[in-house]
Image (cartoon, rainbow, N blue to C red):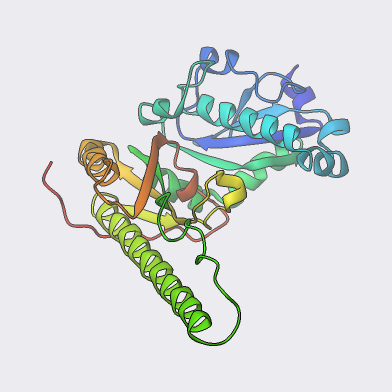
Length: 293
């Protein structure tokens, strides 16, 4: 497709903005949305946008809404989006995972299904947000995201059965039953309070090793597949140079038996999606003190 043809109106899906355009090999190995054309790069005058031409029949407003309401199509679209964002770092490819983010160029990932009517519209949108994009790219350079989820431990009072059955009538039997029920409620409240305290302590310690942190809405038990509540769903922006200190802190905090009231799971490094929204105020940096490695 010639440059003149690309300038004509048509749906263009934009994935990420960077200062360092990915090479042809990084783009050629990534399919993007399977229904679209090859990934390509738009030059926005010092900024570069990784995009893909996509058919309006499948990506127009109504068709896209229907696709994203189907779980299988939503997951497929999310995976395609992430592959293209990885490619924008210059580390994309079939085997690329989160670890590739640490070695690649800084990128600002765009929200999934960011669509424009032709290249000119995409370039105009980038130009209108240029100061924000420049600031984000400065901020994200040589930094990656780590995700941490903390749940109440299985077998804690939060997941234990209710009080034993007892007589419902009045008299000493009924009073004993109510006393046991009251004691059980207190135990549950105390266990929940302890688990929350431990989750907050994990968050406070990890913030010491990060330049910024943000909390996402806790996921429901239906989504997590766990019987116990999620107490912390957080993301941390970490300097690549501080990664060893951060991962050592993670290992200590997530060690089996270290904090018996909770279970913590961590993953990373990732492209810093949680800290790269061009349409929101940036998460403030923590102003952490330096922690010896």
